[in-house]
Length: 639
Image (cartoon, rainbow, N blue to C red; front, side, top):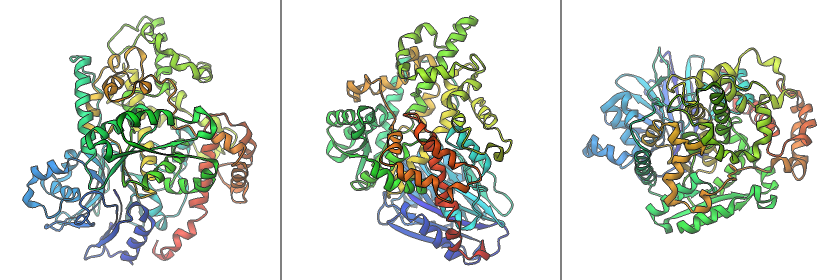
């Protein structure tokens, strides 16, 4: 786990002060790799690479940038978990280190750009091919590790974090990305909130040359239901792959810990890690809001899991004072607002974990792969009713019938207000319209945003293109929903996972995102994966031997709820009021913060409106208002 950066001049002329620019880039993202740093500049000075190292594997000989005997050189962020197997396949005699970084260099020499198809892991890297004179950049299949780039004055800049690029650009808001954020609380299609800064999409690579810089897809998850195999087959196959993944993710030359939220996803990872590594070698980390009642405190479930698995559990009781002290750091490290308030407690738990470990395992991905969000049940139930009325509900293997789904509708008990709103308009429209209504958050901010200034771009059109992807059968409502979230929400949550851990020099690993297992999961028919409308049915069957019954029986999993509404009306009110009422806040082009102030006392208990608007204001404060400080790092005439 590290920070990478680099510069490439398309016209192949020397880049002025390239060494100093690389040093500045390293300085900005030093928190990603506090154990060491390095830079490399090509002899013609039209390309240079920079690296900050967090030492996890091969602590003594794995420094970067790393060069091979053919002159190729790499900067790499992440872990290739099957590096031991690849070393054997490529030939042990080739290697001079025991690092997974060197495996990438030799894999590229053997397979070229197809090397990425051989990797099991999380990665973002840039590799200079000295013979072809090509900069080869790649990102892992799920977007676990970040890669951002921009082109300024015919020069290509890339980095692990956007803030590293800010000295070289004019800091402006991308209006389409801004509109995406207001709608989904994440951004679509490689956009960011910064104008002209792009994200290399998951499962894509770039070959940068003097006349080419186009992203290429190298992997796609295909939902092709396998009706030939039984429930037992899928259960056994996924159990094998889950155990295999955890074993691979435990490869490390430093001790490993685990997040323990009190839920199933992180719980099974922690439990399997303790079985694999030995209970004395694993410790768990948990965050709670004990002062605000049981609905904000899942620590009892985390303790049950840790007790059964036999490992020690550290926890932190998060207070409003922590929020006031750290929320600006959270937004700074995120680079731009993304997802919900969970990033704040994630920051606090990562800080706790970093005091005891350099590597921590988490449960990210289970909801998007196996269908754990309640909104899936809401949308699917409507389609079952429609199918019953139209006489089509028994029309194929893709359908979970309304008769079978009824016993599980008790999961919607706390979602009556959402159901009322959802069914108040557009009932029985096309599935894309209905799911968009479930996830669209823009209506919450009709009066606080200057919508006319955002242009004609339609987030729904972008949504529809992704939702109706060719990799999903149109008959499979369940797969259409999970596929959209897999492609969009999951990378946003991984964005949070990466930044909140790396803010503290902590490597976060996500064993549920193991592509051999996910490829199998994508072939499971809905009537097995989502049996009788039971969310995560097949996953619960797989993990049953490793999880306490109390966790399996839960009906109240919360997803790291944060008592933000309580804070902004009590202990944090003055702080939040001051943020929105500053002179700069009152002059924003796109947000009317005077109206935001009027909304502070009207926020719903678990609403995200104030969170989203506060995040935007702190983002403006952290980056737009400090543009001159970033530009001062590099002489203006060189930008």
